[in-house]
Image 1: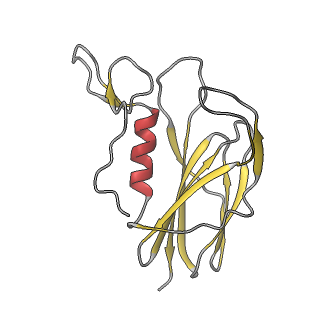
Image 2 (image 1 turned 90 degrees about the vertical axis):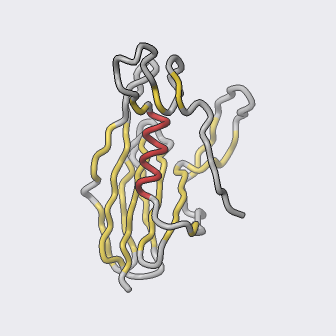
Length: 168
C-alpha cells in the first residue's frame, strides 16, 4: 500500500512543547522548529527514494523496558536501536535511533553492493527539565567502511541519518 498524504498531529502550535512548528502568538518572531519538527525534517532530508528496504534486525541489541505510562506497559526484548531504510538504484538511506540515554551503540550496516561513500549525521539534544529547545546536528566522522559494510557508533540519545552511495 502507499501513503499519498500524511500529516502530523500537533504540527503547528503556540503553547504546547510537543508541536512540530512553534508560532509566536503576537507574530513578533518567525515560526521555529521544535524537536518533533526537527526530527520530521531531518528524516525527510536523509531518506532516498520511495522503496522501503527490509532490514535484518536479529543482531540488534535488546533491553527490557520497565516503564508504565498511559497505555504503554513494560516489555521484554525491545530493540535498543530503531531503524528504517529506503533506497534508490544507487543510494541507500538509513535512519537509526539509539534509545539508550547513556551509552553509545556500535552498529554494523551491510549493503548488497560495495560502497562508494558513506555519510552519517547525528541529531542530538540534551534532556533539560523544560519543554522546548532545539536539537543540534553534527557529522559523524568515525565511520569505518570496507567493501559493502560500514561500521558506525551511534551517540547516546541520538537519531542518526546515514546516506550510503553504492557502486554501480
